[in-house]
Length: 115
Length: 114
Image (cartoon, rainbow over all chains, first blue to last red; front, side):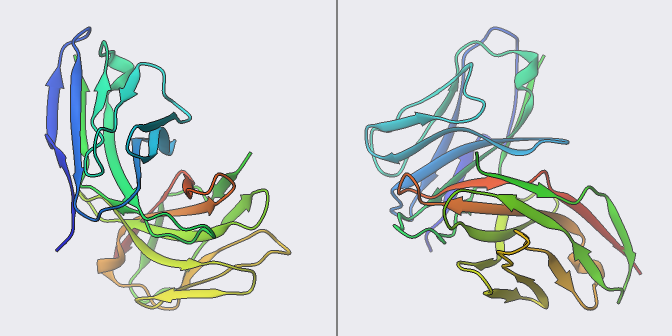
């Protein structure tokens, strides 16, 4: 069965360190997204990609970067981790649909703690 | 810009009670509307969707109707169960850029007590 997986599931890191969260999907979806989930804010879009070599900034992109070298993977990098980046991170993917209504499939999430 | 406003939680109901979670939206063009559910420790999964005005999405006893005149997509269930305890997110998707970004509400936590 196709799936979307994130790793690690839990991560503790120190302020200032570079951290990379992995996301791998086997749906062969063009679209991939990274969100962070914080109490009172719901899910906020960090970065997204519409295909290989395409990346775009979302609502809360400062301090984060992504790269898309193949269809399956969209790693999220925190360049210099800060305590404000303590959160639960979700990766999602969806197929391109010109008229909307596409279902997004989510990974299980990565709980990141910056100390 | 596109946005979703969702009923504040948390919501606590007794088993078999009627559930309504309000959701209104602001969007340019003609968005698609979704309800996603997040069970404890899991990612989000699609509960139901509607792609045009007056469409009704339904799944697992939950329903929501796309009301363009009131820009709303309220979630309802006639008789909730303990297993429905979860966080519910309203979301919209537009294809202005052709790739269907999803915009989420803040989520409503539902707890159903026996």
